[in-house]
Image (cartoon, rainbow, N blue to C red; front, side, top):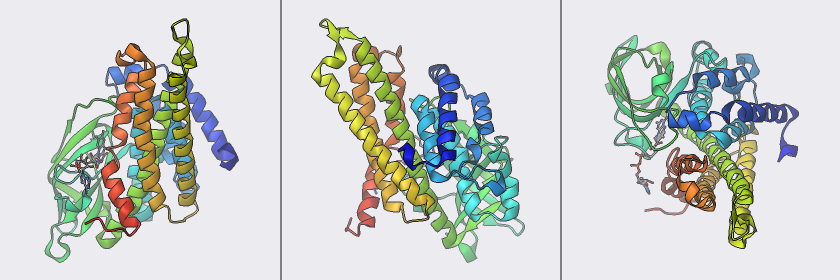
Length: 381
Ligand SMILES: Cc1cc2nc3c(=O)[nH]c(=O)nc-3n(C[C@H](O)[C@H](O)[C@H](O)COP(=O)(O)OP(=O)(O)OC[C@H]3O[C@@H](n4cnc5c(N)ncnc54)[C@H](O)[C@@H]3O)c2cc1C
């Protein structure tokens, strides 16, 4: 894998790896247990260029593309998937659509702070009645001349309570455009926005929130995309987010594998290290197999994305395979820990909880399978 990376990307990986070991490893369990948002860590990651990985140099980014994005997600998730997911919310979910569809002025206004780590962003798409089915969203934006008025609600928005900006997907209410998709940036502290944290079983150091919009005034200058272009942009963005989500699953697997491998060499049962029992050794070999296949698929797909090739089908397959493998790897890694795995004494229980989100977020496994069948031209109805 290293041979495929540019010198710049290799250097980025090495620096990030060292940072994660030194700064994230010692606190990963504690921030999860205390549900503590690690603002200081995000500031330091931004100094290393994590905020601008996919952003071209002309806008202050490091231009490391989707390979760089996957490297960052894998390295961070290897020690804390919560940190990875929070970084991804700003660096990809928020930044990518603005980078592609924003005007020069919008990029200046909404991207610069995010690139330098001064501002955080997130994307609000899911609603109570439209999770997997994005087309069914009901949040509306009414055209009032120089501004839009936003009404509706979103669910599960990552880091909404800590974000300076929120990218919102809505439907046009006005007669001329009725039902067209709109993508706009809002300030989550605007009058009419209510944010409520939703307790969850893992990834606890980063919040997930329900957000309500009640007559929220959005200046027209904050409208990033509309109409068919907006739908195309969302579809393209979702492919890319699925890819980086796969890289988070890969990082969790790698971390869980390392925990299980170390534990199995230290733990003695029946007078010998448990890794020498073939059943345990085979689990480790299968884990390594799944990690290797996932890694190859993810970076192959990321390379295609960076080269401007069609990577959509590969992204669905890579995310599906990596997330399902992640759950199996985390489960077997916990099994290798025996009773200690079920206790919270070892990090493996956290990996297990983090792994569970991988088959749900950014397209459930079931929805990904439907998408794969559709892309293969096979009938699904
Ligand atoms: C921790 C966390 C963070 C999140 N962050 C964000 C965020 O920042 N922004 C955001 O917009 N969203 C976010 N989400 C939402 C996430 O993307 C959705 O939860 C996900 O898309 C699934 O939607 P849903 O929960 O409504 O499930 P549903 O769509 O209701 O699905 C329920 C079940 O039905 C199955 N199902 C649904 N449709 C089909 C179908 N056509 N064929 C087969 N099976 C089907 C699903 O696979 C699933 O098993 C987050 C969710 C979580 C848990």
